[in-house]
Length: 350
Figure: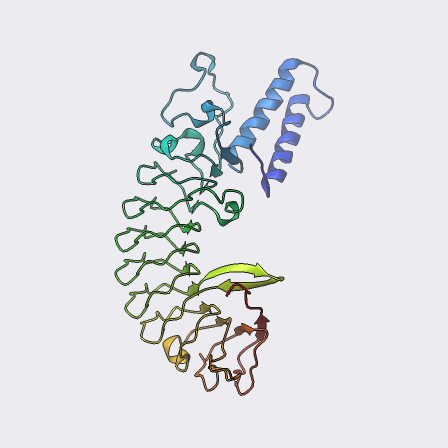
C-alpha cells in the first residue's frame, strides 16, 4: 500500500543510525525492550516527517487511514508528548469509483502534492475537498483503459469544479469531452492536458495567466483563429503522444489553419500530427521565437512528393526539427540554426 523512493532512503538510514547510536551509546546492541521502543519511535517519527509515502486508496484501505482532518486521534487516552504522528502521504492514488470520501478533508492526504484518479472513476469533482498543497491532479489515466475498456471513464462536467489555488499540473484521461469555456482554472496552473476524445471549442476560454503548456486530444479539430492564448503559453501539442515502433510520435486529426491566430511571443515548441495539411509559409512571423517544431507529415495530398515546407519562412531561432521518416525533404532548405533534425514514423491507424 505504501512505498518510498529517492532521497528518503538515505534519510531513513540516517535516522536508524542516529537512533542506534543514541540508544545504545554507540557501543553495544540494545539491552532492554524500552531501548528498542525508543529507537523505533524515533525512526517512525523521522520517516513520517519525511512525507515521501504513496497512499493507494481502494476498497481494502483501512478506514482509519481515511479519518477526517479534524477527527480526534484514535487513542486519545494513550497520547503522550512523543507519540508517533499519524501517517501523511505525499502522493495519493484514488482507486474508488466515487468521490464521496473526498467531501471532507482527510488527515492522511492533507499535505499530498499529487492526486490521481484511476480505474473506473466517473464521479463529479465539484464537492472535492482538495489537499491544501496539491500541485498535480490526473483524472482517469490512459494506462488503465486496456484493463477497464467496458467502463465509462471520467466524462463529468468540470465547469463548476473549484480547483485548488496551488495546482500546477492538470491532466484528463481519454474520455473527457466537456465544455471548458465556463471553467475557472487556478492562476497557478502551468500545464493542462486533455485526452484523446476532447473536441470542445476554445474561443471563449479564459486561460490561467501562468499556463505554459497545452496538450490537446487526438480527435481535436476545432478552429483556433479566435482563441485568446495566454501570454505565458510556450508549448502546444495538437494530439496525443504515443510510442510506435520505438519512436515517440503524435496521433492527431487536427487540420485547421493556424496563421490567423494571435500566438504569444513565448511560444517555443509546436507539435502537429499526421493529418495537418495547412500552409506554414509564414511560420517565422507567427511564432518568431519557436525553437522546436515537430511536424509528422509535410507532403501535399496531390500525389507528388512536394513538401509544403518548401519555401517556408523559418523562425530565426529554430533548433530542433522532426518530420516524417518516410517522406522526402527534397527542395526544403533547413535553416543553419537547426542542431537536430529527426525523422518519425507515421502511426498506421491514421
